[in-house]
Length: 237
Ligand SMILES: Nc1ncnc2c1ncn2[C@@H]1O[C@H](COP(=O)(O)OP(=O)(O)OP(=O)(O)O)[C@@H](O)[C@H]1O
Ligand SMILES: [Mg+2]
Image (tube, rainbow, N blue to C red; front, side):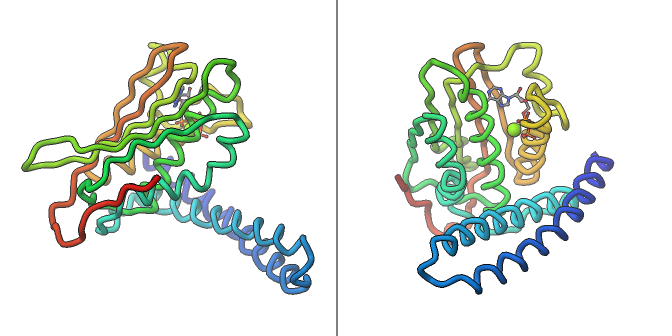
């Protein structure tokens, strides 16, 4: 894990420099365009993509430093919504319908909203990859509910896809760094190992269940925040 951390931190560092350069150039182009020029909006879209890349680079840095999650009680539904916002268009392009079953008034969880967003994004993009090429129904269901006990409440978040499923001999390996069944352009095999590290860092756990040719469910359990004063999560559509 240490070697992986060094590698990730090196990659994050190398990516940051060209990203800063591209930001500067985009800013110059943006300033030079008239408000009415449709390219101005296009440049803004690219700037938004850069901001997203910057966030990812920061996540990689946090991951490689194995930092403790920031002790904030995030609203889990906001993190889900943010992740969906980023990947929504890709789901639509692949004709994947998303069903949200978000339970209102869940306890907040203690953790870092950006890291949790990163986890959700990884799980949704795995689900998309598992369904993208199939003729069958393409459906992603995201559900949240209360689990655990009264004394130790947990928030449960499940991601269920109707994709190709994971063969039995593969399922034990999915959290291993660099384990992938995708071709080299599509996957590095880092998504789930990063998710595993983040969830463990949050004092939670992640479980996988799958049936071949039927689909896969990834379930995350996070300890509920019991401070109380930060209120409850909102249910959003
Ligand atoms: N929802 C899913 N359905 C089917 N297979 C899955 C699903 N999620 C993960 N897998 C399997 O687990 C492997 C590892 O997943 P992981 O997210 O770690 O890496 P990746 O998606 O291959 O690459 P990366 O996330 O780095 O782009 C995948 O290659 C795939 O075989
Ligand atoms: Mg992945």
